Length: 398
Image 1 (spheres, rainbow, N blue to C red):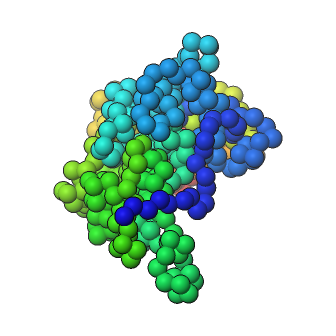
Image 2 (cartoon, helix red, strand yellow):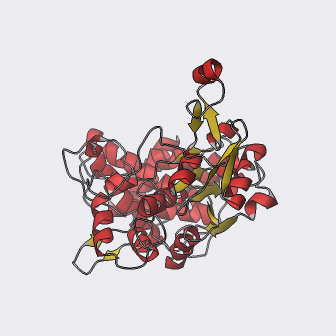
């Protein structure tokens, strides 16, 4: 016997109408907002709110075939993520800066019966991409399970309203559907963040859901069958291998797409600049004139320490224990922008980003501090035009 599950909290978006303030994480572009809307007051609107105008424009001009219950065609979903210009002149800002083929494979996977696993080191925009994929495909990115070491099986399957359960026994009214169950019943896209942080026995709850497209409810003698349009996006990072590795049975249910770090310094500078500008506007921070030079320095430092070699290839470097990802570079520059706005002259300078870089690099107080001091003395000190940066870093390091 099959059972339908009614939504119990946030209703999925039925259309794209009210654009809101921008938000998000990862390799991102910027988007507009309409002051006065409820979503515009949110500190971090959902993707379908922040970019509602772009989604609506794409939907209006999208004449390509759409899979069942998709808001957009696969082509339009890829355009939404990668950016482009529509025939009517509407500009779609890029949400992800990276190889086009990666996005195309990810979107195509969601149009099949296989789930999508976004894999990569921390800070490669896995969460950001999963959110925007769900927003573009289903119009709702909120059907989310956040993976932690304490995530219970109920978060993926279903739970119970214990007051009703004790009073009346197992019943439909006492059942509390999980985001995954809701997505199955409504033909939408569910998201599971940090899958490898979830205990292995809880992870395997997904096997039947992904292979049989059904979720048994033995207490009621019923099941929820996934309707067309249902799929699932999971994220995991490379640094978590060995924490709770996926079983081979579960891994087979996913098509894995690896999100790489930005290939070139120019691409990473562009990503950081776009995202910092977006966050700065959402926080009402004044734009920092000529801030691109400090952004370029932060990106250079992170890439050199991450790669273990200077950009000219002449000097080998020791790498610290942290990931020094693009997301961390965005955080360092955003914090520097706030310092410049509230405690400086509004111009982003070396002193505004130095402390943030130190905090990102030196995670292990003993080993990482040695790596950082060696980098300062052998590379930064000798680099032309970096004297102010060297002095600012030496000051906070001391």
